[in-house]
Length: 279
Image 1 (cartoon, one colour):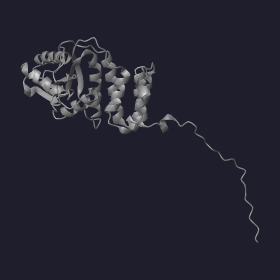
Image 2 (cartoon, one colour):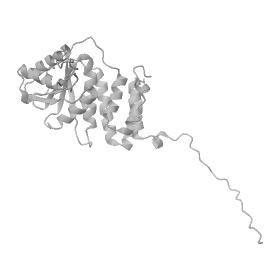
Image 3 (cartoon, rainbow, N blue to C red):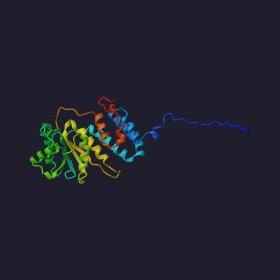
Image 4 (tube, helix red, strand yellow):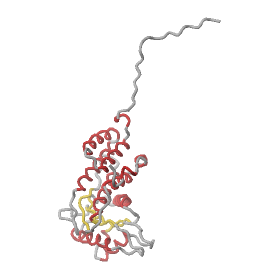
């Protein structure tokens, strides 16, 4: 039997590198960056704006369009939180052409399909605004929220406005949505059919203005397919006065994530990150 050749062992050390914690720049995905920004904003963290700047830098490397969209959403949200609410009618100085659309947010109907007083109050603010800006279009949104399946919020609102003398040719009807998230989706879908419209003014109850404005603006940004496109812009509001409070920033931010249409991003959502007492 032949002798085995001895194994030669080298005395040179072998360097082994261990990465127990991968660097964020290497490991984190675009969806994870977006989720991190949304959760920080929902929590109202003190250093949120500083962290946002870094997260947007990382996001631009992975998805420039998403970075543009989220930078716009969070900047709009910042501004909207401190914006004035205009009671009863839109303010002076808005676009006086068909480029302006007055978006009237619906409100749940009575069981028999009739309108509740709060919805009528929203319509009164919309009517005064339509009279002030006679060339502006109007969009009534809201689906079937009554036991009477034939009644929809948008159709009842349109009927009321036409009865008050508004030209039906000025009114766009969106009668499928049943929540503010769906309102935002379907408003933007309907307005694609009206390319002359560039600016939106939201009409709702005072407590609902922030949520409605932020969600519609977010969806308008999510509709973009390139950095060269300009989104629809929310430019103002009119409201009826109530004694109610809107949902928290945390719940609004969760709704924005639901508007993205990104299943992988939505799979990251944990309810505890967006509860009213989050953070």
